[in-house]
Image 1 (cartoon, rainbow, N blue to C red):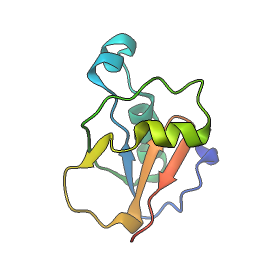
Image 2 (cartoon, rainbow, N blue to C red; image 1 turned 60 degrees about the horizontal axis):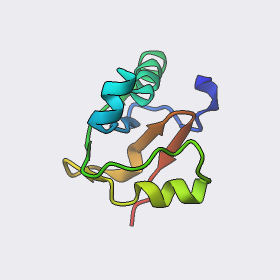
Image 3 (cartoon, rainbow, N blue to C red; image 1 turned 135 degrees about the vertical axis):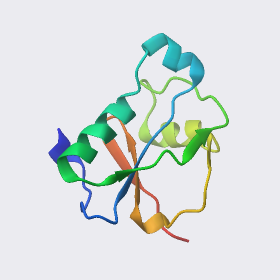
Length: 102
């Protein structure tokens, strides 16, 4: 599973778990993104930073297409600090998002 992530693991890489809503977290009691991020950190000796904060709850996504998922989470997060975007990878269950610098 860890090999599925297309991440060039170097010391500059920073992994960012995607925060869940409080409601979903209380139902599930764990965040898959955090678990995967921690496993990647241990295996590849990279950094983790919790720089995202959820500012809006989104609907469940298991029945949505990729395009619908992106629309569903649009504006759901804010970044809590200024970061160098080219080194940050945002981890969701079974996927990784690398944001491009503007």
